[in-house]
Image (tube, rainbow, N blue to C red; front, side):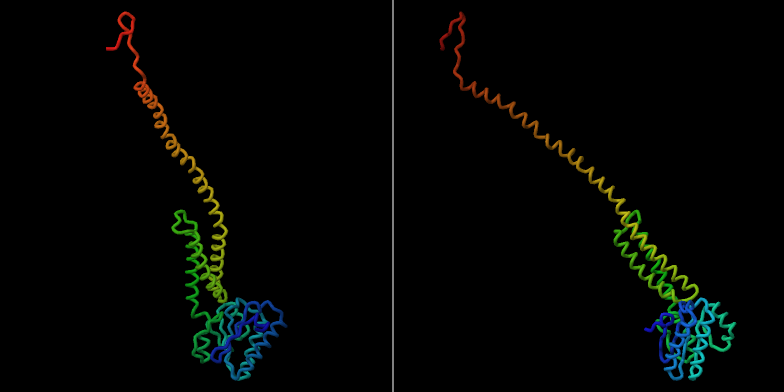
Length: 289
């Protein structure tokens, strides 16, 4: 990849050379644009009777140096007996070309499919950037919508009061859909008009949702931590209160045992002691009969 390809993209499909000019080239000096033009001309000159598609869909405006570059490409293609078609969707760019009198000279179409038909090429648009995504544009928009909505649903599940699933699973869903939304948004950025704006919206929403979920997740866990700790701390007193009666229950049995012991001892002693003679009627000791 050459240094100049930072400002344009070069594709080849079934003999068609596609050159996509990027917005960064508009901000370069005239000498830099001339250098990029020379590099593109060299590539075109290597093909006999080239069929060239110049894609301007990434551009929202175009300066005089860019117009001069495209004119130079057209002259190169024309001198080699080839054909050039321009793809454009932005009204401001079309007005610049119209003021330069080029709309009557060039074939200008809104998408690559029509450009291929004009060049006599039967092929679907390659999976490149710019106008090449026209046929899959609605698919990208649908993928972006699904990814963005899924990301927001995952964020809602992560912080739902009823907790229908563990927060880590909800975050996994959120990140998975965010990747889908971010991918679609990145591709849509290279298109023009409303699709480019949708791409920016998809990127912003998915990034903010994921960052919000990651940043707020530790705070949510910290908020739940003290409540769980308080519940655990109150448990031991209840356990002690429950165990206290069980510890004192044997006490009556232990206290009752010494009470019955003397009775047994006295009876035994009474049975083993000698008989004491009883006193007689007049104070003497009577004889045993």
